Image (cartoon, rainbow, N blue to C red; front, side, top):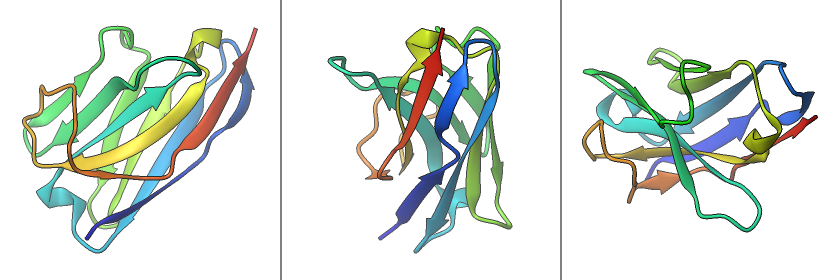
Length: 120
């Protein structure tokens, strides 16, 4: 059983940067595809980014503004978000699963989420 704990959320202004962290316990993240999803109020959960041993992939809306990375020694995955927009206001969730890198859904483990609020 993998436990995921997100941190680093907060209130920022449009154009600012923010880095989310997701610390794992109970299993090595290096053996999973790990990713980030987000859910805005009244909307469905949306794929943001994922990373595994072969590389990274991003949701279409990211357009080069975000970067996902993983520190296997710390068993932690990060999401660096730059040029944030008000529509990026959402709860951001970390995930770990066995799906292919390109999958935009997950059926594995979830964290509790981190609130990101972007003011205009």
